[in-house]
Image 1 (cartoon, rainbow, N blue to C red):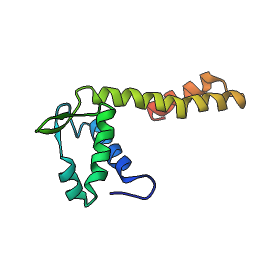
Image 2: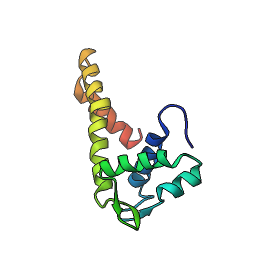
Image 3: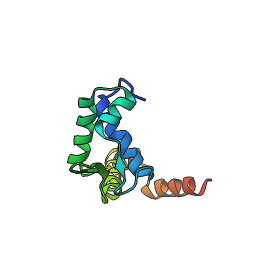
Image 4: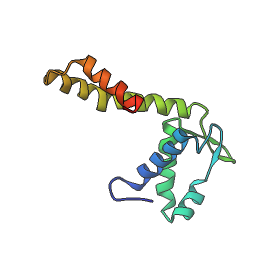
Length: 120
């Protein structure tokens, strides 16, 4: 499950975010505890705790004292909004700049995107 490209805690956080985005984890659904997560994936509990704390800080998860961690009711919408911003900043904006620099009219870019959407 884990690779060497990024810290394990970040991979855990990214996996949980992906599960929230896909609907595998729903609003107010309880997630495994840090100890359960650590035991299941055979990692240090502190690593799991760091991932969960990051998710709490980002309002993806929230704590219910004595009960556990749950998916925030606003997590999916917030993650989608952040994803859109990242997508435009990392994909669309550079694509538009490149199209302008090589003389491709934006109407051609839009037409191509529409063709791809239609499956042509």
